[in-house]
Length: 386
Image 1 (spheres, rainbow, N blue to C red):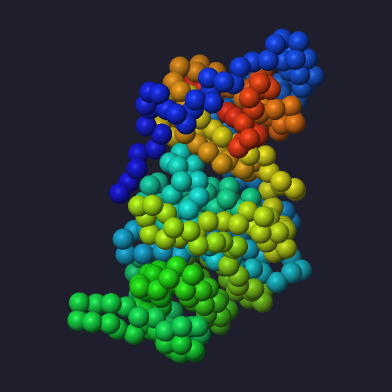
Image 2 (tube, rainbow, N blue to C red):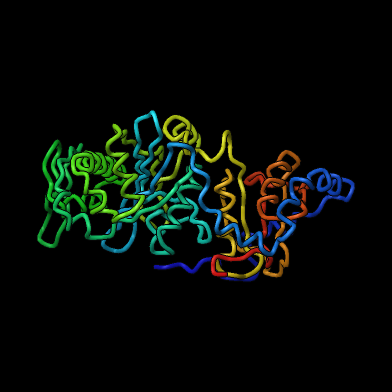
């Protein structure tokens, strides 16, 4: 079921923070704004033209010899059945990081949902920004493998080594789809093993996806035309072929199983372990060094997807957006940036500079312990529909 993003509503408790974010007295606020004016004012010369430009700045400058492609395998229902981030950098083995489609995290503009819902809600681009935000890594492109394509590709007959048997319940009883150990599987079965959980646990399914992706890379290295068969002509296929040929290391992003009310069991990221994982395996893609400032972005103008261009810009510049929601009202003519405590003034100033906001407000009476910076998007920032 598709959820409409950021539907305007009155009295949103998610934005009650606005009521307590009172400007400190002028003696504190003015010196702060003035001392940071050189940093903030750069985007103000032509604010009307500058803010929509955020949408065109999605692609960060790529480090020499470094690239990444987010792969989405779509299941029969149109959801994302499996995700993997393929990456390479000159002088090192390439990597393929398997990310559970049942990972619950922020889908900017929609709330906390499983990554499997991204294509249903909006499309592959939502998966890109959600994964980039969750892991803190640069994703150069996203490529979707449509449902049925693996099954229809003869070269995707794979030798896969499974750690457990895979059982599928059907109307007539149970069918063993996969066996423990190494075996040869037809393309139609390969697609099912990759994109469908069946009756096993989420952990077993995640382990199985890693095995299928590993076997896929082996076949991609052996059949040079196969990347184009799966992804079409273009940079994604070329990049995937390079990954397959460069001694790829397959691993799973650090997650913990979690039970979610009203949804199938899934996973949550282990943030401390994720930071270490990125530093060890994906350092060439890291969007920031050290801990990323935590940001909430609230819709203060009532436009659907008002927060998305802001989220995209901030994520690419090393911020971690942990919440998007509606503000208490939709009457904000101008965007507001609030530093949650004195220690977060520099982070707030950086965010304001990216958005062309002249003044940074400082909350010292009751700063949030959950986020470092609050941003209320006003009518001066274009939405993705503009």
